[in-house]
Length: 317
Image (tube, rainbow, N blue to C red; front, top):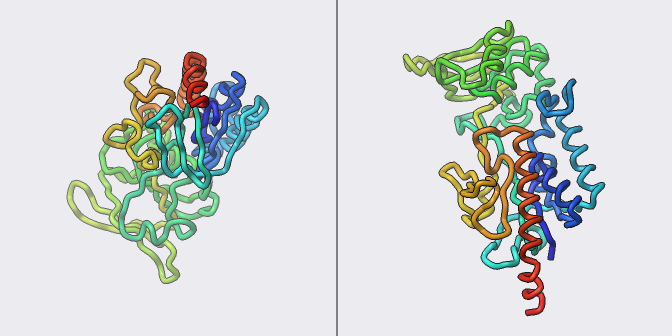
């Protein structure tokens, strides 16, 4: 039985692993389907403290992983499919079965899709993507479309100006939801053409099955038209990776894990904690995820120290 099992290897999970490992808890980290989390697909992180010139997202996550391993964290390549948190021993099932005294859920979130015709058909190499930093370089000298109005969408649009000849930013409202600095950058950029009150209806393919345009509707007039472009980048938010829990932990209406404790990481089940984007739909930053991972690990350590006798009794029984 493990002292601590950590689910996820984003900023939250790896920070939790560093703290747990330094406390000699020898944590087991289950890497999940995207080792390193979303930051591995980010070319440059400018707002993580300690890096005045910024740092490559993949490199940042690799550094965190190496730091955790240095102190004794262990990593397992697996995806947990179900859990049983009903007893003192926490049980998890993936390709293997696991048991733990405490669990930290830091499984992050995944991009939300539009569910419009053509989206799935041209997803992955045919024009539709959710990651500008992954695929932007494939669209050098081409016109592309970004959908969304928040920080993610404006960041994607700005990044794509490095490659694309023009970036159409589609937003269903007449004002961006992004932070002022990001909104101003997008509005003022000569390569970004913001299409206000515009709703994407369908991604259109050419004879080879590659994207050629997107059909859009004016939210005010209802009129439709086509915007010719080769790339379609979706940046409309995320879905927390919590479905595998099967209702074992409390969530809000959107599926984000919730805590009613002042620490923000307690789940209401003894010995089970949450951290990162699977429990945060307000800030969703690398540094806030890391902070939650730190808190979750410290809370798990304290709980273990206070409940040593519980597992001694379980082992004896």
